Amino acid sequence: MPKGNGKLVAQNRKARHDYTILETVEAGLSLKGTEIKSIRNGRINLKDGFVRFHNGEAFLFNVHISPYDQGNLFNHDPLRSRKLLMHKKQIAKLYEESKNKGITVIPLKVYIKNGYAKVLVGLAKGKKEYDKRETLKRRDQEREIQRALKDY
Image 1 (tube, helix red, strand yellow):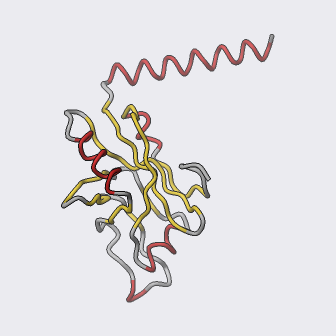
Image 2: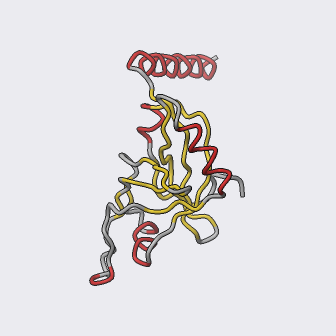
């Protein structure tokens, strides 16, 4: 299965509006027992998430996974940092790229692939306000062209 395919659980739609995605990498998530159950129920929010690097490892911060309803005593902290499971070469490459000014690593979507939770992280560069307007204008123009071709 190619990267990014699987049962989609959550998607960071605001990311493509606020950032230009330069490159994407699939990573596994190191989770606790009740976290995977909450993810399978779709109770995850990627909106403010980002990736930081520490001691040659990548960690996912600010991703909210709601506590599992039947988890009681075994529930986890919803905003805890979670380790990303990637090859060392992938981590090193993302780390080197993210040191450049204006470049960050953000989660784009979470999905279930072969029973495991995967996250698609993207190397992103922030857009300026005029870039966002340009993107919206281009999308509207393409929509108008498609409507004209459909009616023709």
